[in-house]
Length: 292
Ligand code: ITT
Image 1 (cartoon, helix red, strand yellow):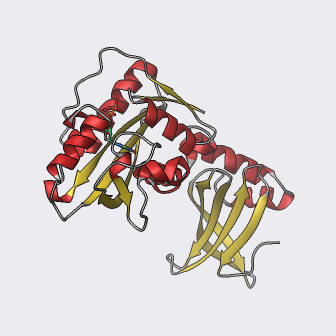
Image 2 (cartoon, rainbow, N blue to C red; image 1 turned 60 degrees about the vertical axis):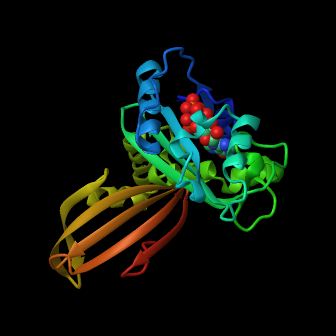
Image 3 (tube, rainbow, N blue to C red; image 1 turned 45 degrees about the horizontal axis):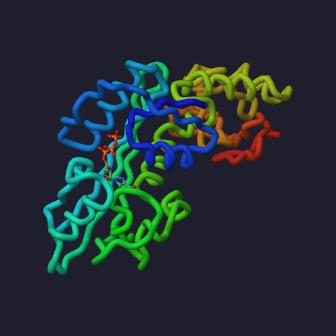
């Protein structure tokens, strides 16, 4: 899985590659980046993703982030990269502004936008709360990390290092939100493959065993609903049979089959948890006993 990242910041590329195992993150090479004029992180992240999509096609990623300091009214915020040259000068300016200020509350914010191969936009946002230390500490991370102490910790991001950031940073949280929004399709089969992946899961599901092939005669072989007739106690009942597929995690999908009758007041639903290799991991159901 390859995605082009619309960023000139090599630290972001490295963090995102670790946060998205199995992906190759290729930073876009360009010398005519549009200026960052958005009023929000989302607008800026979207502009970077769209610029990248136009140049490289999808999947394209755009990321915008910043640090918001409560005592400074949320500054530098989306201006974090332009507040002062990154690293020691930006930190010195921040500590100078906060000199003698007791309220050290701050948070990092990250907004991620992915544009799929077919132009669909998927987003994820992550924040992490903390405080600004009185002096810089630690060697890891980048930017404001030597002075940012996340809530519940005493060490700075730069002291806590990559492993901590990979679990709990604003970027890690934004990636998790993005993947949740995608139903993990990006990991499962590549950004933009939502429909094709669902289709593939269903094709494999309905082809698998004689029982599943029989289900295919009753339930739609793709997401949707059809009229069907159920037999209950030797009586024919008009019903609706519907199929849904949800992609959960890299390794799991759920096929949901529902029979509804009596104007939808009665229903049986089966949830088939499918592993990536197509095997059914478990079946749970509402209503009647699970199918054998
Ligand atoms: P691109 O716009 O090319 O992606 P950039 O570094 O200019 O690169 P932003 O406009 O999103 O990116 O600015 C984000 C700034 O916020 C970044 O330069 C850092 O100063 C700060 N920042 C964001 N995430 C950070 C992190 O995880 N650790 C330290 N500083 C961070």
